[in-house]
Image (cartoon, rainbow, N blue to C red; front, side, top):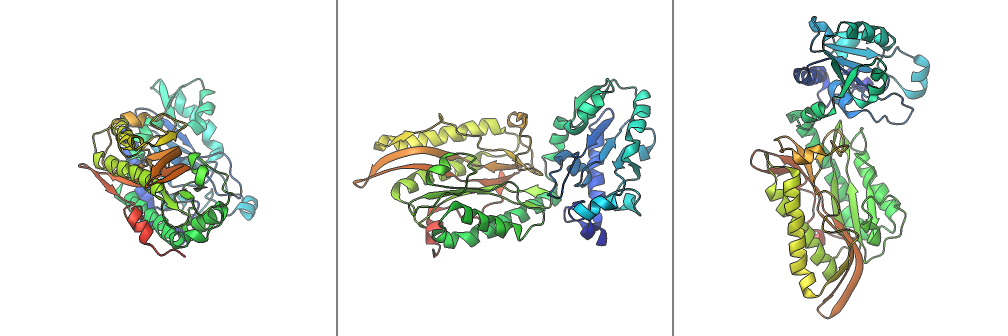
Length: 429
């Protein structure tokens, strides 16, 4: 265990300790089965003293969270030992003096510690690669984006491996499901710590600092993304980042937050009243979003697509918005028509898995996938209720994380309060 503690930010053990190398090797073996030619993965090129943001596909297959490494998977290699090759930088004690310890060569027992039989110095990659492609019978190779341009220099047909890789990565193994549940517990604990004191927060920045601090105290791998803390009209900006405005007592506060536990993320949104109590218009609109979220959760199951069930959910929201608000004389101005954003995205080693092309929206869900459930409603709303005219800018988003199963889903965020009555019943300082 000393190795895993020493390299805790450089080699992510997924909480498995000495079993981690076997865990990553199993992933690589599964990936090799999907390839019909040589495949090259590169890690990020550079890093500083700041926390590294590793390519998720490289991290998924190796657990290595540092720059300057290359992974080769070769299903056509005659020797078993050459089907998985890792190229690592040489040890640089001066750089380690500045940035901390890194995996490198030469290093005793490095192969056994990270689960590779064949490890070469990174400086040998070019000569090794030229020799390998000279004998390659296939007309194409695969690579990730981090090294694609370099490989095109060799006048090869270089295919993007991301779709093949994503299909494997987005289905969580039992080990990662356990990590996802732990991330949820951390987010839940942080939310429950700030909620009873919500009326004491005078501005968005302080609230954000406390929320993030409570999460960071419980995970060494940090936040899943910078938190959104948006009060009042600010919540109508979907990716609000300013976070320095005063919080007025009549405001709703939209919180979008999540942490990373080992390599797995969570993504939670809650909308709460700064005073601890919803006014009648806020409560009406909030329950429209909440009922839509529950409707969407009931429709999630393996075999369906996020596109098809998402369209049903947005149609449901518009239907009940018309029934409960517009028909009662409500007026609204929105910066969108019906659909402000996607209602679900994949979650895993990054918080928005597959976000680059979103092809996954049209593919059937599989058991083990983790998805968000986040309907929202944003704009200026006006309605007379019991003789009182309510008129305000309101942004509401409620987000849970759902684990897809054969017959439905498991709501991993079920313990994070969201019912109006439950929030209102909590003691407010």
